[in-house]
Amino acid sequence: MRPFCWGLYNPLVHREIDYALARRATIREFERGGLSRRDICDAHPELLRAARHLGDDSNDACPICAEEPLKRVRYVYGTALKAANGRALTSADELENLRRRHDEFACYLVEVCLECSWNYLIRMSLVGRSHAG
Ligand SMILES: [Zn+2]
Image (cartoon, rainbow, N blue to C red; front, side):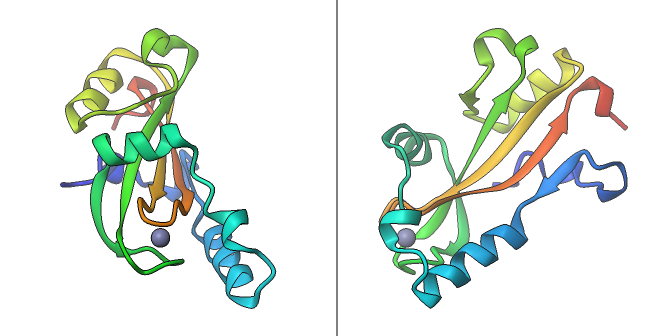
């Protein structure tokens, strides 16, 4: 499935923060022995549940255990979202509906491994009517 926030990427207006460098640094530190699995494979049970039931499949293997392809979960945050604030999205349609109804909110894309509980925030995007077009 196409990632929901993909079309929003535009580094010129800083409406997106990509955490790829920090992610790579964390993985390197683990490989060097500076971090243990317990330090980095600490997904909260709620996050694991959301990844299992709502997450998109990715083609990327887990960087820590290499056992499982990673799941990707999207969370939305914004006080204007009311009941949806802090929720994991269930579908691309849900994001599209929120985007049409609200001026601005944040969408967080998190990768999760169901095997070893590795989890990492990949990207934060600001979305909504203020960011259309
Ligand atoms: Zn893993």
